[in-house]
Length: 118
Image (tube, rainbow, N blue to C red):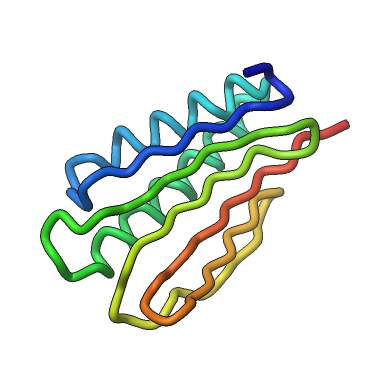
């Protein structure tokens, strides 16, 4: 792993008590990629929101949530996926952070991207 190339994935139970840990991992990944403090905070906040939505949308206690963190020379990416019977939330983009929700059957995936300035 280097600041311009890293990836790690974890699968955890969909327990709302773990949302803070997911946020901290996002902040750590952003810091590792040497994003500004503001960019780290924006990314961590969006990841926290998406994790909360994913966990609540499963409607099953402790359903598996997969979280993948990756970075390269252009962006830090966080992908959260889970099985959910609900409609995927709306996608957004603000302050350099894009949040893109997709659904493939009952599988919901949220791709969060924070660009790295050149």
